[in-house]
Length: 114
Image (cartoon, rainbow, N blue to C red; front, side, top):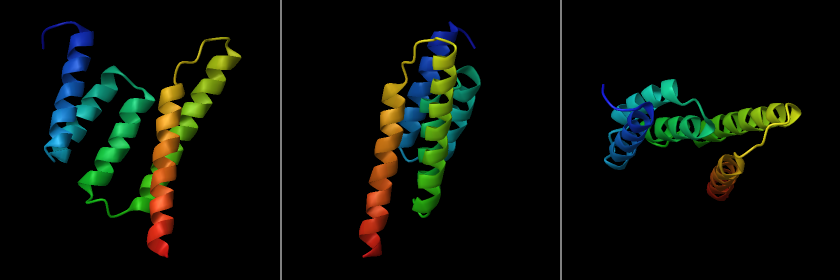
């Protein structure tokens, strides 16, 4: 492959997005796994969880909540570790998105339970 690592990461992210939008979840997951090798961050893990959920036909919402909560916990742990080292933390958006998705799925589960 040619190009800078940043260009390769951007290309993989674009491939993943296009594959997901086309409903090609296997291809999207493959791109995400490759992307994860270049850039291990919560956004990639979040997208792997969401893509896997869609790949499975959106049939296991309880598992989705559990997996999103796990990713959220990892983000919080990384944040605490970074703060202990005196590093700045810039993952507020990641944490907010994870929290938002957990709440939305939980509300939908509660709604369907009625």
